[in-house]
Image (cartoon, rainbow, N blue to C red; front, side, top):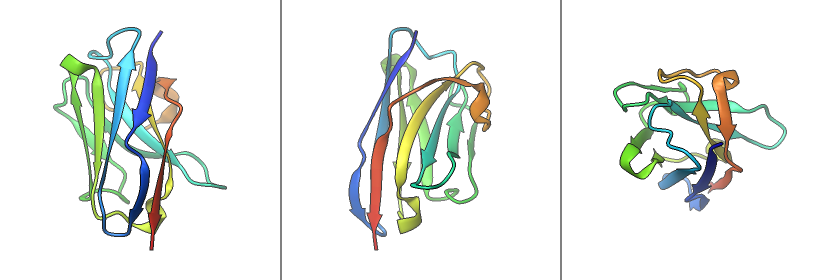
Amino acid sequence: QVQLVESGGGLVQAGGSLRLSCAASGRTVSGSAMGWFRQAPGKERQFVAAISWNGANTVYAESVKGRFTISRTNAKNTVYLQMNSLKPEDTAVYYCAASRFSAVRSAAEVYGYWGQGTQVTVSS
């Protein structure tokens, strides 16, 4: 079993930055791709970014490309999401997830473990 705990969310003004962290425990996720998803009130869960097991490959949703950066430190079993130039439409609960595969995927179905989420609120 893998437990994922997100942190780093909060309230920020538009144009500001936040760095989310996702710490894994229970077993290592160093062989798994990791992803970030988000869900705004009344909307479906949306893919944000993913990173391969070794960090060599990343993929981003078009809406965050150029503003968000996903990274990982396998020695710490931790994944990060650096969010810059935040917009009010980025407001959502952000979830970290561990994939069943080592390569990057954007489909939520391939992610077998999910965190509880951290709230990000961007004010205008």
